[in-house]
Amino acid sequence: MSRADVNAAFRLDGEIAVVTGACGKLGPIWVGALLDAGARVAALDLPGSVPSDAFAALAVSAGDRLIRVDCDITSRPSIAEACTRVVTALGEPTILVNNAGVDQPPDAGGANRSAIEDLPIEQFRKMVEVNLLGTFQVTQIIGGRMAAAGQGAIINIGSLYASVSPDQRFYDHLAGDLPFLKSPAYGASKAAVVNMTKYFSTLWGRRGVRVNTLSPGGVLGGQDEQFKGKYGARVPLGRMAEAVDLAGPVVFLASRAASYVTGHELRVDGGFTAW
Ligand SMILES: NC(=O)c1ccc[n+]([C@@H]2O[C@H](COP(=O)([O-])OP(=O)(O)OC[C@H]3O[C@@H](n4cnc5c(N)ncnc54)[C@H](O)[C@@H]3O)[C@@H](O)[C@H]2O)c1
Image (cartoon, rainbow, N blue to C red):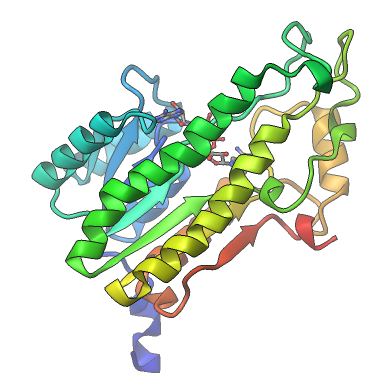
């Protein structure tokens, strides 16, 4: 690539992207950024999942460059069926954003809290099943096709909590008999995704598939003022992430601009994990 080609290398015209968990909060950020860069996008999410307003707006503006496909990433047959639909409707996927994930949002009332000693193992298992095993199965099926075709870019969505433990003091203003505890399963599952990213980057490097993690920090949207104040004070850039902060990094990792970047964790956290 010559220097004159660098700007063009960020374009994704002709690329076919698959984004899992596309109908939630961050899904539309990835989908919108990939569409804006020229890709066509298949938006996978659970059957019956209610699209966020942001996703609904994209569905209107993108026309036939965006398709919505049912897929449960914990079910291999469901992923295989979704993959067939994508290939039939759009063609061979060249970009995969493994975004689908589950977390345990802070609850206002505290009805479902437990002391760490009593944390139900089912809750831990569910996060591992979706965040880690689901990501693995989608990578097997869709990433496997990319490796067979000899090209592709996979972006696994991690988290700042892949690297550091949550600061539970962010939540100590929430009412309830027991303190709200962010689950240890979340960070553990995301740390495993970072490692699995390295695994596939080495396995498929010679087959033309780049595999990276994009680890966002906390993204603005619906948090209470006390949380935002405490969280923002802990971030070197002084604030939570906004949608626009995430768009450039995902396009970079998906594009030829990142042609020599693989096995990397790109933390988009305002410096949170630098402190
Ligand atoms: N929101 C943040 O501040 C933040 C920060 C760091 C990392 N992340 C990560 O970003 C990703 C997206 O987070 P979000 O905030 O948009 O969450 P979200 O809950 O708003 O959206 C997640 C989406 O995944 C889907 N999903 C859940 N289980 C699924 C399954 N089995 N198969 C297919 N789809 C499934 C849900 O239906 C939903 O649409 C997650 O991996 C999350 O861990 C989020």
